Length: 163
Ligand SMILES: *[C@@H]1O[C@H](CO)[C@@H](O)[C@H](O)[C@H]1NC(C)=O
Ligand SMILES: *[C@@H]1O[C@H](CO)[C@@H](O)[C@H](O)[C@H]1NC(C)=O
Ligand SMILES: *[C@@H]1O[C@H](CO)[C@@H](O)[C@H](O)[C@H]1NC(C)=O
Ligand SMILES: *[C@@H]1O[C@H](CO)[C@@H](O)[C@H](O)[C@H]1NC(C)=O
Image (tube, rainbow, N blue to C red):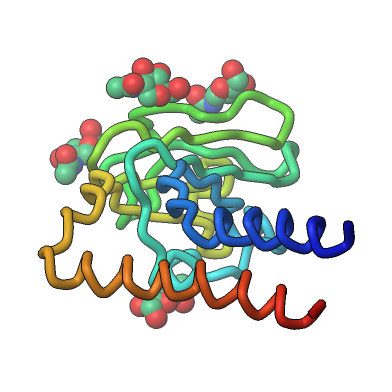
């Protein structure tokens, strides 16, 4: 009976190993991570090395009495000018979402203090990269070879352990 259980376990394990990797999904970025949307954080550095893709979200958490979140154009971003916002993402609770639903540069800033303490963030939104192309036959061969090896070796090893 125990052997039977182990066999079932082995089969389940083998299936898990062979399961395809789930697709890429949209990401929600909390701007500033655990420091949130606050003065004296360099958001250029925060954004460095991150890739923002169409469908991702920026989540701003801040003191609603002190700050807000506006989208401006490049010139106004560089000059920290909040006089002619393109879009106002402020809804009043100090918790705002910026859906990155257009492939473009987003120039965002704290309009209340005119980039108070460097509160501005520019992100470039890219199209989601296409899923990896079907690999050439040769490498498919080696990948499935590894997979089948694993599929055979694990159950075998598990069975050996109990016999
Ligand atoms: C933030 O960091 C970037 C990149 O290192 C730098 O160019 C920029 O001057 C910094 N901004 C501030 C306000 O310190
Ligand atoms: C941004 O808007 C300002 C004011 O409307 C305008 O003077 C400036 O030329 C604009 N810059 C860009 C890059 O569109
Ligand atoms: C942005 O929208 C909020 C909420 O509707 C409003 O209170 C605020 O005055 C607006 N700010 C600007 C600069 O338009
Ligand atoms: C992007 O999101 C904004 C804010 O929710 C919305 O107003 C706008 O219509 C959206 N644009 C597209 C192209 O979906």
